Length: 142
Image 1 (cartoon, helix red, strand yellow):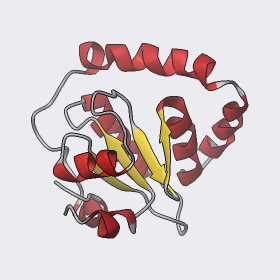
Image 2 (image 1 turned 135 degrees about the vertical axis):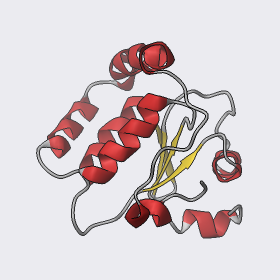
Image 3 (image 1 turned 90 degrees about the horizontal axis):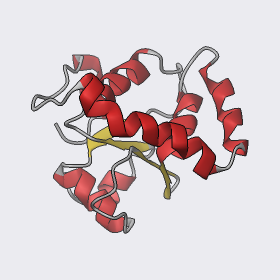
């Protein structure tokens, strides 16, 4: 799927590093702890044709190494994306969005620390994450 207008109708969209085990596990966690009702996240890898089309549309540099949340035609990266993702989760997770009051450069120190070590600690994968059939339609490209 690379018709950008059709893709963007599926917002909110989370772009992740498809090679990152931590990122794939995070998507699975989000799906398992998602709020009932409300908008549903859609997912794609930054390495996919769909991910590249989205990045080109929003003029996001190709060498950026972060999760990217596209919501209401706005781009959120790093800790801004991570904190906004909590709003889609059930339980107490949405309380964490209060941390958006901390300036992004300070929040991103924590995000960058984890991101730099994600391959070393969690590894890389060349395989698609195991996706439950009920969630398959939420992935824009597999």
